[in-house]
Amino acid sequence: VQLQASGGGLVQPGGSLRLSCVASGFIFSTNAVDWYRHVPGKQREWVGFITSLSRTAYSDSVKGRFTISRDNAKNAAYLQMNNLKPEDTAVYYCTVVVGSSAYWGQGTLVTVSS
Image (cartoon, rainbow, N blue to C red):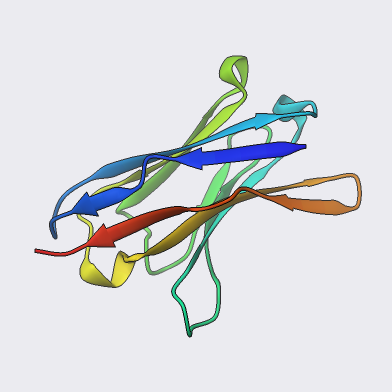
């Protein structure tokens, strides 16, 4: 199982970014995908998830600003982030559970700063 997250970068407050998570090594379409973020020195924070049926849920801190989607044909999940705030600065990770094991991508850094 491999997860490759990408799309991070530097963006000004109020801007947008779209993160991608490309998966391989398992049947992607049957698995939910979670997104987390982590700021060094703080606890990892759950951002949201998308189920295999594309149902989504979000943390209160990002609800209304972030949208998770998936494209099973591309084995990919996406995190669209709008109206970004400085407090959204973090390393973002995608993760899946396959069988009884959790797998994490390598993370992609998002920096929101003017």
